[in-house]
Length: 211
Image (cartoon, rainbow, N blue to C red; front, side, top):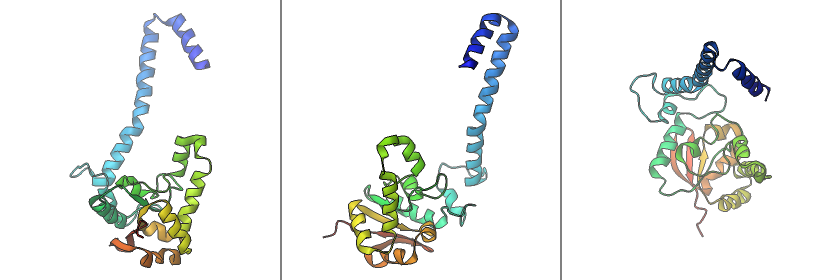
């Protein structure tokens, strides 16, 4: 408010002067330049990460195939790339994919739903909470707890939730192996069928609608 009043006062006193016109233009272009730093820098960084400015392309997923993992403790890797590519090529209809819910932003959480467009239990928790506001109630926490149950050791409870969410695909990748018990992940070997596998990462198909 004070800054707006100051601008009005200065404009009233010096609006017709040449130096005020140049000052306004300088301020405008200075702020515009600062505002462009992030988008230009971010685009350049992404291009470098994907292709090092060689053989440019529009494949926003290919960078994932070049690294065993990005420099985070929890993130996606080249095995995820293979399974995400398989899903994009072979998932015939839009059905729910179960993966580690979005407990943190800008890491590997929700990598399958992000790069396939398939629905999942919970996107980035903080971002979804911002978008929906008070309407979320306890839903976000409940979805996160449900994911933990699905990946947990209680098979009947996991089966009930998979049916509730109409879950067709279950991801057991590097990220899930870091966060959930091995016994809970191993149960999918007899609960579901392997749709695709790359290294230690497995994509299961679950027939929730099977009688």
